[in-house]
Amino acid sequence: MRADVVTIFPAYLEPLRLSLVGRAQERGTLEVRTHDLRAWTSDVHRTVDDAPYGGGPGMVMRPEPWDAALSEIAASDPARRPRVVVPTPAGRPFSQRHAEELAQEPWLVFCCGRYEGIDARVIETWADDEISIGDYVLAGGEVATLVILEAVARLLPGVLGNSASAADDSFSDGLLEAPAYTRPQVWRGVEVPAVLRSGDHAAVARWRRAQALRRTVARRPDLVAQAELSDADRAVLDA
Ligand SMILES: CN1CCCC[C@@H]1Cn1ccc2ccc(-c3n[nH]c(N)c3C#N)cc21
Image 1 (cartoon, rainbow, N blue to C red):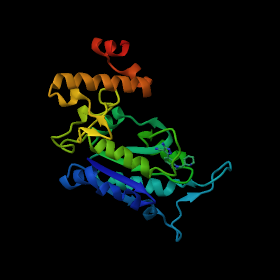
Image 2 (cartoon, rainbow, N blue to C red):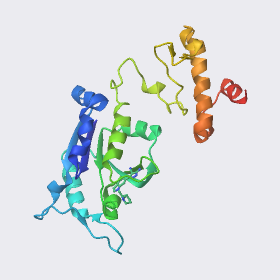
Image 3 (cartoon, helix red, strand yellow):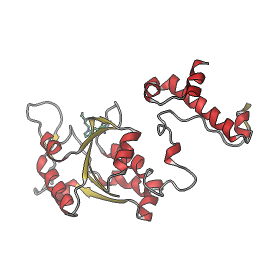
Image 4 (cartoon, helix red, strand yellow):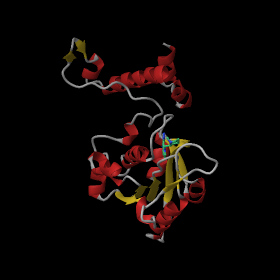
């Protein structure tokens, strides 16, 4: 997968060189190219924003630099068309399913807005996806791009390695994950649940599913309504 990120703060994307996403890049599974939007300005001040029509606070990002940037990036591989993703608080809520969908794409381009956002005509012309990572307001699209790219990168072949699997993820079965424990067996007087030390893999799986169900009912009843529950699941919830 190739991922291009257009931003006025390229340094914000440096964390993509670390850890899981960094390893995916070293392996060649993911290629991240970061671009400074100001490279596509033509004035001495490298202006990327202007006052909003209709008045109101703040500034809006001008369409010309964005159109020049996206046109040049898209033209860099004429045989393909990238899926253009615009993080915005007005976007479709990001989810694991959405990450799985984006992980199938060979080429993503992320448009990181700032100020009050990007001129709406750029979104109308270029955006394939407008995504929100949550119901809170950030100062720009860079953090959202980091979130989306990490969630997508970990789903790419070979990135998680043998020890873990995206199929075991929280949300992959529609539920929150069960509590996890490691040594010591007793810590601050609290013992690790005996079933986890039993060696009975079937019992451990049942316990973890029950914990995930109870946790999801308590914290995210909306997810329970969407999850596919077995008779055994319903017995746990009815207990
Ligand atoms: C504050 N300021 C005036 C109100 C509108 C937003 C603006 C700031 N801002 C500019 C570009 C931009 C992109 C994403 C986000 C964003 N916030 N929350 C999310 N879940 C986001 C995503 N994904 C915020 C952005």
